[in-house]
Length: 61
Image (cartoon, rainbow, N blue to C red; front, top):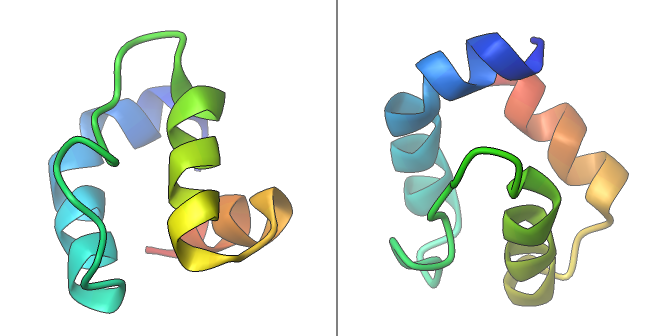
């Protein structure tokens, strides 16, 4: 999934991530154009997963 597809499907992806990781909040998953890596850093802190793992997981949702 490329960045444009990700942006287009972000609401669905965000919902799936919140279901999988119950401690994630809307603020954690707030995506602003050009800030994807910052958002991933917040998710990484909460989940303890590596950035590469999260990118792969998100692309598979």
